[in-house]
Length: 459
Image (tube, rainbow, N blue to C red):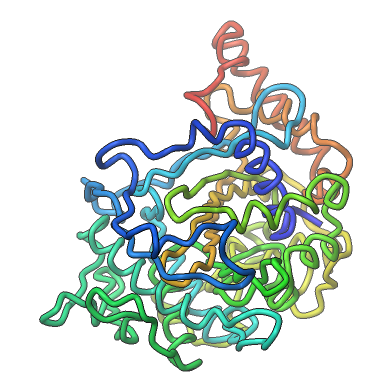
């Protein structure tokens, strides 16, 4: 099976723990607006070594200043992430600090993603968006975290992308509604968790929580997962909106601890290298040190001649699963061509397409994911965002230096990584095509393009 949620978390945490333990001194706060500052007193700032498992004291937290985007997102091309390198494969590449102004990335595909995500929520319901209730003695609900996240995203997006989002506030400055301007959609937010300067959190109904999670999901192009610490010190996937995962199903993961997610997902080397360090890192993760990681794999889509013609206006396709292929012809949400039918998919088993796919360069897509982890200050939940980019392989074949570098990276995948990425479906064709493109570049560029390093990881 291609890389899924379990492998993403495993790779992230393995790398982060190593980086964190070796270079804690390098991760300290920078002055002024380059990173955030705490405004709380020491009494309101929970320390990992002092608090009980599953307990979190809300933190009064002041975010750093960041600039509004100088361009309308609908005029911005997707960022061309190419997170692979020459030579041997290393699981330790790619973790870096997240600038706060770059938490959420939008581009000219926003409306397409918005309609795909809306269709998924309407047709798949709790299979793609859900919040679990408290499990007494085990772990708390992510209900409050969902409300906190919706408010944080509304505030962030309206400031970062003012051409795309506006908010209305009450007399005290609290956000009441958020509007997605290009979609013509306005959403009424549930009341915030706190009033004024108080750090006492209000109770949240499940209805409010799910509505907040839906709003959050429709505001961004990212999938969102809420990880909550349990009384046993483990972190549980207690809620989220996983609308466009491509290769794994939210229904198979929600409610599981990180241990269970990894073990059931057959993550390579998890028990040997990751098991003892993951919960320690999650518990110690501070509010002020978010991180980013990029990931990639390859998927197949249906050739154009097999696709149905779409005669509906954009955003007007009826909310019924029979129209999935019209809403999402590039299989962003679910890679049916690679993994087979979503509803009959067998979790934990290798890829098994229902119909033999047409293996051709024009049917291959490079699927890149930008993932962030950060802790919410009021509820302490850890938010995991997954932003997916789909790029035709033929596009990569024309980019300077990319074909040779990608072929080198694919050839370096260890066997266990290859199984996750489903290489057996497309390896022969992909490598042949990349080699041909690389040779053309070599002949034109005299070898300079062939070994072109790019502008730096992860590009």
